[in-house]
Figure 1 (tube, rainbow, N blue to C red):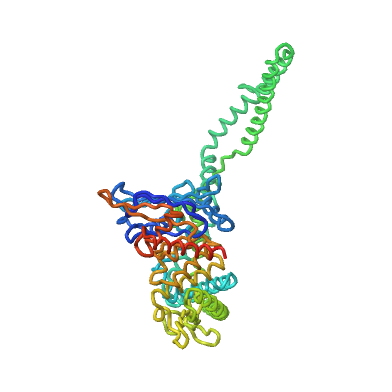
Figure 2: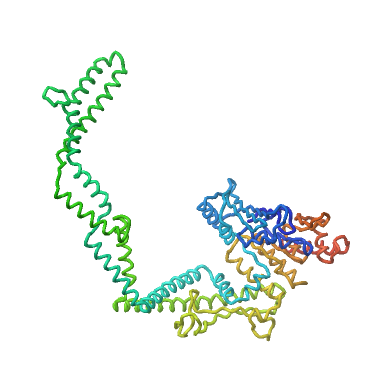
Length: 585
């Protein structure tokens, strides 16, 4: 849940903090007081588009901060994503997030104590909060949104089937596009393939090996300077193994070191320091002996071989010819050859490959058609359940005779989309299958079933939207739901029923409601009022929690515009009592 929301410098709000509870939070206030800024602030906090025009000139930036406390699977998902991005929750498990927007339009975001891209706030928002306003009602009128709503309701197995359709469709279109491209650009592909084969033939003849150019350079230097290297190695070996003159009676370095070690060891009992030095001399003698052996081996292998040197020159010239054409070094030439082989397979336009791709496209088309048919049947099954549950909710929202139908229709063929036979009918197929979904409203018995955009008034559309959200609540979704005046155009008994349904939602979700209806506000677990102050040179607004008498006065204002009316307060108290009984039932 969202425990706290602080808004600074946004619209008419100068600086205010909203303490929120886990149940139903209601936000009310006079028209123009700034209720909409609360929803705008929430949108900014969770990655929404920033509007610099809403930022107050003083202090020149808007700041929205929030504190989330999550549980269960949502907490695991969000915390893991934040950790991956370099942030971390607080020690008590809370997650702090903030968004800053300047008057110039610059935007910054912080999450879990670290600066983050604004898109990260959006990722968290998708997991945590769902905002529903009148614009969402308009979005629900679009067929694609209605199909998405049905798919969301249908459940996890349906979602797996939908993912399978999308994956198969993507593979099918990739093969079809590849086949068409190979046929359409056959000449260009042949020309490119010929050039690649020429390069590969040249590289294959030389057969360069990884790191070969560096190894040959070192070997060439050794052969070119063989005499100088031999003189240096011999002199060093004489010094180590037998002195400068190398006579038989000249002690070598190992012998001298051994004599020194034994002399010190003889006095080690008198002074331990000499014992430590004797041990170090023993190590030095071992190292000198190893160097002597390695110098002998080096001298034995050192040979001035003019034929080998000439071979190396020729080999390096062949490698240089490749590096001039294909890459900066031999390893780059080898990498070019690998890429060329891969590209050649992509350029293949042989009849055998085209036939193989044709068969693969046909196979994948059949798979897409089969999966789309299963998806359509799954949607039809879910449509009946969805319509039934939404209709039940509408009855409880003072629309007892209204009924919702969900029509799952084959998408007409002949549009820009490809067509396939799905369940025996040629339909247009996309990544979401071959169906169009249409929500229809029967406003009363005997009325025709009309699409929502034609058959629902503003008030009816608000109740349909709420009914759908109540149905969705039973199948999970984000833990926090925000409703921005979705009760517009509603009054009387319908308003009471909306309040009751929102209170029911608040049993399993945190609910934030911006409303102008006292019948809805009466059901709140926490009532927040946005109040406008026009006493200074600049109009500002703040938010305060109202309880007991203050809450009754706010409801009286909403009922009759008379917060101090005894009769209005009496009606408000009666409304609060009814709502309290309803919440306990």
